[in-house]
Image (cartoon, rainbow over the protein chains, first blue to last red):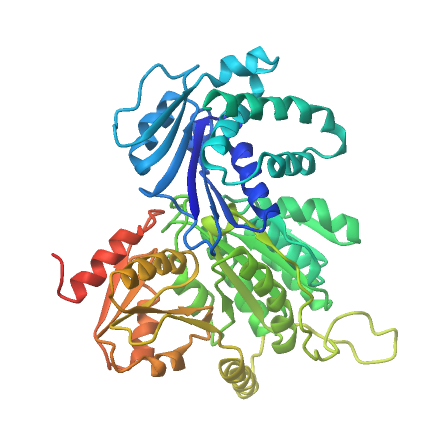
Amino acid sequence: MTEKVILAGFGGQGVMSMGQLLTYAGMIENKQVSWLPSYGPEMRGGTANCAVIVSKSPVGSPIITTDATAALVLNLPSLLKFEDSIVANGNLLINSSLIEEKAKRSDLNAYYIPANDIANEIGNSRVANMVMLGAYLELTKVVSVDSVIEALKKVFGPDKQHLVPLNKEALDRGAAAVK
Amino acid sequence: MAKVLMKGNEAIGAAAIKAGCKHFFGYPITPQNELPEFMSRELPKIGGAFVQAESEVAAINMIYGAAGTGARVMTSSSSPGLALKQEGISYAAGAELPCVIVNISRGGPGLGGIQPSQADYYMTTRGGGNGDYRHPVYAPATLQEAVDLTMEAFDVADYYRTPVIVLGDGMIGQMMEPVEFKEATKRELPAKEWATTGTEGKRKPNIINSLALDPAELEKHNIKLDNRYKEIIEKEVRHEMYKMEDAEVVLVAYGTTSRIVKNAIDALQEEGIKVGLIRPITLWPFPEKAFLDIPETTKAILTVEMSMGQMIDDVKIANEGRLPIHFYGRAGGMIPAPEEIINKVKEILGGVK
């Protein structure tokens, strides 16, 4: 099993940290992982994206070109940019709160998750990324939600543990959205 | 020790500190900025010093000064910044000063771009500085290797009294992978009796210098350095052979590119096409002898680089005219996809057009 996932959105939507959490969780489960960010001028005000690989065998190239098993797109430019990067029968998770367009390809499993609306419902629009991640984990089971929470606790450090329940709820609501 | 998830630039910094690096001198440039940033945060905690110099030239000359005291020192930069440091590297080689220099390279020439590139092969293996000198160049392909080789680089620098370069690229610097900081197997290192640590009135002063106006003396110095380089060639070559058995085409690639090439090789093997890889881990000394182990089944060599073709010169030297050599490269920050490499291999084998 090798999951190759692209996570993309505006700078500030938390796509980089969402990717890092997934990577961290994979490491906690003793899987082989890599995280590769886009870097450079495109990060400033434009789109940000990262490529995460979680695998049972050693990661070769950390780059994902046209062989993504999934893409999580949080804004329209990301959908336009990465829809063609997904393999046939791959998963395309679309943040339908901000993206009105539908997937063009019919050979993908497209899911429409109103991530910002769900995040607002539970009280913080900033956890929209975690809603998306929760949906993705429910679909692929690539790592367990518990591992993501464990990773989150480490990343947050002692001062921000109070944010863990909110993030857990966001993950659960994301999962419920694709059940 | 447990594995930790780190960015390449930070992992290299952590490895340097683990190896006893106390002082860092640098000047900012993308895509290596997390390395000096990490050092600026961590070195003061261990009683070391971080100095952001006014330029790359100043930074490498601070390295010259600090290395002269016998301390373990590091600088880092990216391609155009490394070009500026070349004079200082030549001086350090002449004065026999151990130091570790990291190049997280990007596209060129000139200011170029900021995306990953391997176009600094000539500069790092031939030296952009003047005079008869060489220095070891390590080219990690994974972050674990970047950590291990950075630690090794400090020992090699001290043992041979030479600058050592760790050559990554933007991808190695920016990506995250789990790394483990293992206890390195320590070499027996000679005491630094040459270092300028103060005479306390008990011995003649040590002098760190690269000026030698007497030709006979300078030639003696050149011969001494050359003997050391021969010893490095003899003892320090490192490379990996991957799926070489019965290979019809042998690919040669290092660093980031070697990972993409491995994906291509695995895909080709699944199709029943036998291909292998020689991956130089030291670019200098180049693993020339590995090319004597190429199997009789091999019809051609394919060198893959993120440049317009630089390492291919060393491949030609190592090949000694035995096999035809092909080249595939992407440049300017473009990264070759496995499919492009697969198609090139098939083209060489006269298959799919």
